[in-house]
Structures are given as C-alpha cells and as structure tokens.
Amino acid sequence: MDSLHHVPPQPPELSALSRPELEALVVELFGVVATLKQTIIELREEIARLKGLKGRPTIKPSGMDKGTAPPKPAKDIRRPGRGKVTPRVNVEEKVIKTEIPVGSRFKGYEPFLVQDLVISVRATCYQRERWVTPDGRSILAPLPDGIEGHFGPELRRFVLMQYHQGQSTMPRLLDLLRSMGVAISKRQLVRLLNEKHEGFIAEAQDVLRAGLETSSWVSVDDTGARHAGKNGFCTQIGNEWFTWFRTRSSKSRLNFLDLLRAGHTDYVLNDAAYDYMRDQGLPATTIARLKAEPEMRFSDQTAWQAHLDRLGFNALKVTPDPVKVATEGALWGSVQAHEFLCDAVVLSDDAGQFNIGRHALCWVHAERLVHKLDTFTDQHRAAQTRVRSLIWDFYADLKAYQLQPSKRRAAALRKRFDRIFLRPTGFVTLDRLLARLHDNKAELLMVLERPEIPLNTNVSENDVRCHVMVESLF
Image 1 (cartoon, rainbow, N blue to C red):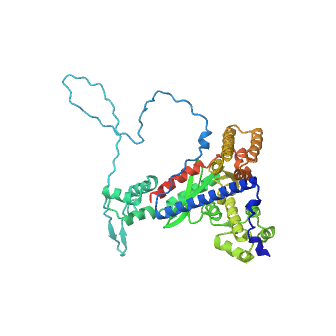
Image 2 (image 1 turned 30 degrees about the vertical axis):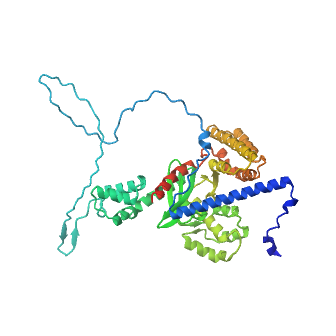
Image 3 (image 1 turned 30 degrees about the horizontal axis):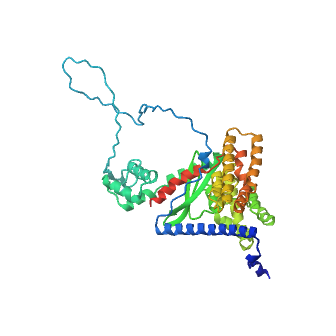
C-alpha cells in the first residue's frame, strides 16, 4: 500500500469543471509551459556553449538600483579645462638651444612637457666566476638578487600584468614578446604564468584572512570556470576594500566553508558548530554523541573522518546526512575559532551554499524574479507592474534609511514589507513568488539592523565580471 502514495492522482474530468476552474487550470498550464520553454532554452544554450557556438543575447536587467538613485546635480555647461598634467615619474629636464641673431636678449625658458614610453629588450650574459678551493670544493659566483631562471623580474612582471590585468591571451602574448625580440617558447611562457607563484598565493591568503577578520560584511558570488581542462566554479569573496578568488571543482556549502577557513585545515567542535548543526536539523542525540567525546579540535580531514568513523556516523542512513551536517558544522566552528566573520554579514544572491551565519539577500536579485515572471493576461501584467512599482519605492526608502537609520523608521518599514509581500494580487504564480520572498524577510531586511551593508551584490558582480571576461577570451 505504501507504493500507492507515489502514484499520481487521476486528473479530473474537464467536462465536470466550471468556467472559473477551467480558467485557473489553463493559467496553471501556461505557467508549466513557460517553465518548460525556459528549461529548453537553457539546455540549448548549454549545448551551444559546449559546441563553441554563439549564444542568445543577454537581456538588460530591470534597473531598479539605478532607477531609485537620487537625481544627479545639473552639470555646468562650461567645459572645464584639462588642468595641470603631473606625471607619476621623475621628469627629466633637457635644454634646447636655437640659433639667434646678434644682439638678442635672453628671456628664460618656455616649458613643453612630453611623455613617452620606452619598451626595450635587454639581454645580459653574466660571466660567473668559478673557483676551486685547495680542498677540492667548487665555488660559483651567485647570480644577482631577483634573478631566477633565464628571464628577469621585469619580464616576469610584464607577462603577469599583460595576462591577468591586460586580459591578453597566451598566444597573443607570445607573439607580442617575440615581436619585441624576446627569444621565448610557448612552454617557457606557460611556466612563467603557472610556476613559482607561492608568494602570490601566500599574499592572496593573507588578504583573505585580513578581510575576514576586520570586515563587518562580505559579498560573495560564483561563476563557471575551467581549470586544468575541466569545468569548475570560481568563488569570489570581498567587499569595497578587498576581493579574493578561488577556483574549485565544486560550489557546495562544504566548499564555501572550506574557503572561509582561509588556508587553515582544522575542524573544530565548539558552540558555533553545535548551533549550526541544530539549525540544519541534526538530532539532539547525534549532537550529544559529539559532545560526549573529549577531543574538540582535529588537525585535518583525515583525523576528522576517523573520528566520525569511531562514532559510527558513516553507518547512519538517515536524513539529514549526519556526516555532511557534522562536517559543515565543524568547518563553521573552525571559521569562528580563527575569528573570521565574527558578527559579520554574508551578502549573497540567494544561492543556497552561501547561507552561512548572519546572512543577507540581494534586493536586485529578488526583484529580478518578479521582473522575469511570465504573464499571460492583462490582469497579470497589471499586477506585475503594480508589485514592481511597490518594490521600487520600498527599495528607495531602504536607501534613505541607510543614511538616517532609526528604530521608528525600521518598524514602519517592516510593517510595509508585510503589506507588499502578503497582499493578494489575483495572479497565482505571482502570489506564490511573493510568499516565498516574504519567507526571506529577515535576510532581505538585514539592512535595518546593519545599515552599513549594501542592498545588492553589485560589488561581487563587478569583480566576477572581470573573471568571466578573461574566461571568454580562451
């Protein structure tokens, strides 16, 4: 009899339905067809991407953020002057003489500043002294500081700048270097781009740690990327003061929590870890088994998995998966133990893997769901337009609240949020969407508690866009 629960119910006889019921059924079927069309479009785009074909053009966003910005002050119609040119390098002075008639008087100099760029290739053959000591040892004179391999530090700096900052592809960069007179092969250029970057990696890790320790909020996002010939995902973490990227094969919550450890490999069981497990629905008896053990910190994944094996977690076949939830909790405990994201807000576009700690949602992505909703009747379009107008006005008032926050205005905005997202519109699909957005009230209104956080993830969008542009060149 249990298997009968999975059998879909028999559809009702259409002849037995009334006209309002038939209209509701047709509208629901329109929604199903629109969803299937969108799925087909996404599948076609993925096929085109895999074949290397050109995809469909991108649709412009709704423009809510710019539309609610205060008007810019009128500009002066007079065209301002260029101003004084101040080079960022030392200025070399050179006197130019001219032929003059006899009896002329000298009246000083008239300056004329010229900026130029000199790119030249220099090859140096170091004749290193070689000596043999009386006891038979060989002594070779060391190379000057900064010389590693057969390419100097300035060439290495130029290659990295052109490739990453200038977004030049490797074949174009190879042609450029050869046209300048550098004798370099493709394999050597690849080595310059990929090898001996431990210093850069350590610096990036220090930047991430400093950002997670000091920031009151971080914005996060991810995008598709390729690494080592395989599809992966590049995760961005940052704010107005720093940005950090890392490409992995997964974009799960386990991966995001591992990135938040900023290079640390330990797993920690503390109050933050146990609170996370409770929020994820792990039974209290299972959490008690972890608490009963004296060991609370584990050096790496091997030690942590061995601990779970001793407790019999891997043998449990229940939902939620105790191994997954406990591992995520221990990772979050490690993040908190290293004093990363202490009371900081994580701002995201509602991707599930980023819902960690104090979480806030992007208003632009929330409004975009209403903007992209398929409508089929004039009533639907009117309801969509009305709701979008209310959201735009509310978004503008949230911006004003950030400038002058107060408890009274925060309470009024919370009540107004309920009126917008709980009002029936007569458009069933829109009502369901508004109800789902209302369930995220605490995350959408995090700005009322923390006015310093942005209302959107534009910071991450702008940072990730550069990475996407680089990927599209290859």
